[in-house]
Image 1 (cartoon, rainbow, N blue to C red):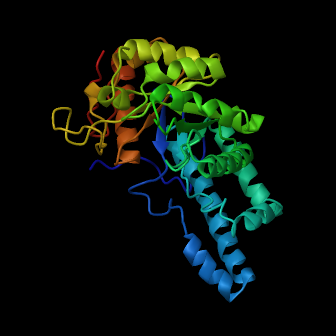
Image 2: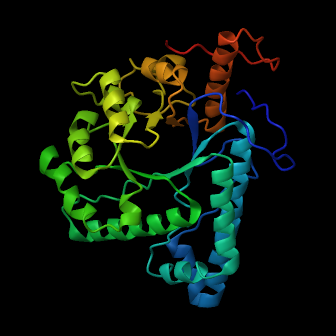
Image 3: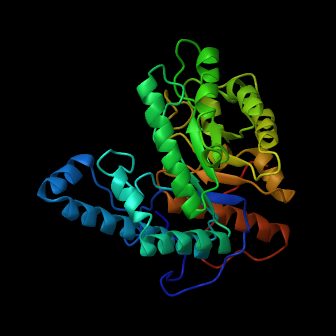
Length: 348
């Protein structure tokens, strides 16, 4: 696997100009051992609490301090690498809404060092022009038929909103979730849940088409009615299609964002498009899976974000970025960078 050509981010500073669409790295790294987030389980925390709540609290506090420090260093890495979006790992604050942990979370938000760490993350993201997002786990189902699931979803989203305000998160991406008893009924059941959310949370939400039930065509009318944007996932659309073309879905998704920068997701199928179930993600992005419409948008100078959902994480993002560097060099008659890498050709 190709290694990224980067200086030592521990000793470098400065902001890398964007030469590609805003490409997003999702949650984690495969080849940066110092950029790891720690996690824990409710079971482990309960065992520690049995030894004394102070023991458990201090363990959890140190974990949070470590993760916030790691996030700040991730943003510095992204700045040097020219990666201008980052999806925050769901385990940044693990088990935050668990009944045992929630009092600790509230306590930590009153600690001056934690507040300062959050502020540094927010300021670094702003200074380096890095768009932050969250994509909570699938257990958040705001249109569930079970009231307890809806209540826990709201509690989790309110927590995500609080954390998002502290860190400068722009987008919280959700799937619609349940399709019972039918798609239309299930989709509009979200309306009741949305009405219970705080403005801080509601203003960050965006819905994404999934790869099994809800297509862009299903979601768009609701997004427009609710004043919420659609994150168009091209891979999901290809395995769960509707009557919209990729060009139409892109155009409608852009419109749903109003004056905000549109957000897209991209991945390639692990075994190709003709190998049965094409849902699983590839390590990298196959150039032909990049949408022609997105290339035209980039060439026209339109701002947009694409999260790269690939198993090889930073390698896939950097490879895609090199492709755009190569396109720009060819457009300006510049010689290719002398780094031994050949950029793939996108669909145009």
